[in-house]
Length: 281
Image (cartoon, rainbow, N blue to C red; front, side):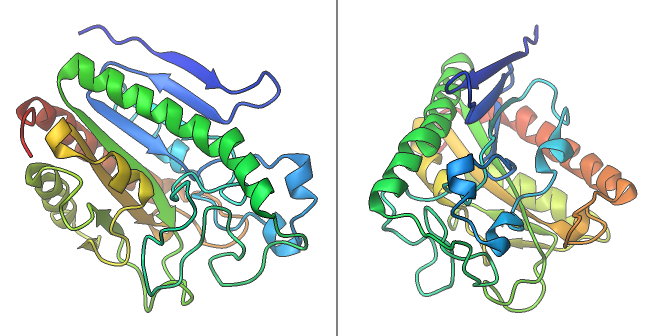
């Protein structure tokens, strides 16, 4: 099979909210939280806490780069404080009722600290949704449909990371691999089982399934096995690849290389599994 790589930019010439690398694999990697772009007018509204951009999925696009060379990637270049690409665009439904979380445009960071000296009003939130959130999901939807049309099936693997200890969001220390399938609803059981089995077989790592992170809005929105689109979220503890989970958030080369080896095998296993999934709810 020939592989073609095409970098697409979605957005205006001045601002590209989305970067798409188009490949021939049945796997699509979603990268909603690695971007650090903040428009000047938004940055002016952020306070000192917000301008630190601490809640970035640091280096995740680098960590996954070329692990599965034939995969399609869809990456948001804007920061989640501008608008969160992994939240309900209607801004109403909480992903985790009864638990602390952040909204379509977050008002606090993950520690519950306010990030704005001038919080956005409803009109501003809608403007950002249209300018950033919508182009990202237009691109992701288009790539999933293209891949599904080509292969008869598409697997969305949503790439995330987070600090391993955030008392505002969860108790204790987060496991290394946090797999989310919304209690098995977003993908065939073979997809979930393949990821679980590989992660649990890796010495030195800890794994949980549908624990604190059950899959964000993206996973739940696109994961429709009955339509041959399967989705799974991987939330990595940042301690698995960073020197420290606080500024300057530098990569630990040895940790990252070891983790990349695991993730490469995982993605390869999913790509091999994909042809067996057509018509599998």
